[in-house]
Amino acid sequence: MDRDLLISGMERIGAPHGDAEIGSLSTFIEEILLFNPVLKLVGDKDPDEIIIRHVLDCAAAYPVFAGETKASDTIADLGSGAGLPGVVLAVLFPDRHFVLVERMQRRSQFLKGVLLRTGLRNAEVDQSDLRAERRRFDAVTCRAFHPVFSIAEDAIRILSDDAPLILYKGQRGNALSELDVLEGGGYSFGSRIEDLRVPYLDEQRTAVVIRGLRKE
Image (tube, rainbow, N blue to C red; front, top):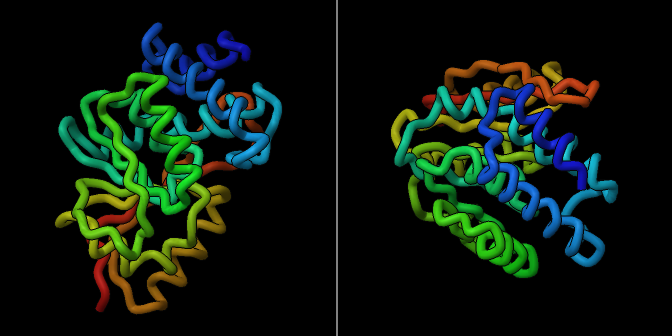
């Protein structure tokens, strides 16, 4: 694994990249590489591609989370899968608590192993389906999960008052289309779309921030 690639990418994002952060992220990447052939955690097999397309991709939203959340917040990562973005964010924000919501048992077990190997104490794994989740959170995020209009009802149930829903998305046009469908489904909300710059990746990435989501 190319630690220099990881370090330089984190530097370009402006995210923490000290020995503790790089050490934890390196261990995380090693765990993905070890278990990916069996669990199919990510589509990429090359270590550099995993660094760029997954770890740096998740870290690119660091400024968004820094502005939209605060110390002591509890943040849910829906459909956490390989721990993307939840594990990456837990490394970068040690003063927030992250709940990795994953319904598949084998992936939940993988995530528990990652937390043990990395020593992350500000994250936990919740093996459950989103529809069964009853806790309320100070923020909710997801990446490569369902379109926002298909999870809106559940998101309203688990979001604290005026808590942000922060969605990792690709092209801005696709993100706008999802928001149009959400509004057309009778939901009201405030939103903005932030362009994300993922180092070494020449593809458009965005973060959608939704607040005040409710059904009319």
